[in-house]
Length: 265
Image (cartoon, rainbow, N blue to C red; front, side):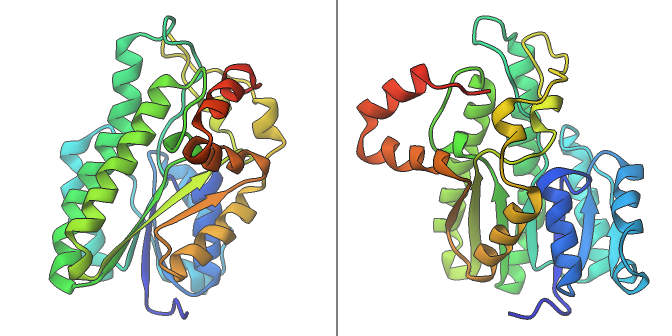
């Protein structure tokens, strides 16, 4: 598949999987829209590209927690690109705290960014896809969207909710030529655990051992792009941890025992 003259819009593009995906698509010849809260970090991503790659990119800062601003961001993106072919939802935050420790305000914050912000951007862009009878949503959730583990109650709730929403969208708009690819990474070596919020809303500030030993963001991005090219409905990315998705489906009782005892950080 050729990405020339295709436009890919990526949230969470300033770091981790989003940054690696942006680099990958830029190298493949796509026009890339880079979005996150941090304009300076987005500029650092683009500064590492060739002049030709930068000429087909747009830095478009946005905050997923400010849902009311997102329709305006869609208008800006369309004014620059004319058309959007792929929307990659990679922005979000994680959480590391028990249910008892986690305030409802923290749960709401995680849900606002990971779920409602993603929905708001999707709903603002969807009419463009419907009008064109083409388009693909790529939703980077997590294996935690398929099964849950301790210390991630709010995060798991938001990721499970994304699967429910986008499965419904896929069914409603199949005949409009709109695709949905759910990307479910396991442990990927990013700063997700360092930036995760704990029970009082502050940052954890430390790297989980399993995250530190995970796949590289570049390997994850490569697998994700291949799945998007094949318009796969879902892709699991990781090492042994992806077995959990199959155990949850075919041996749920065993999976519950494993999760209770497993090291999850």
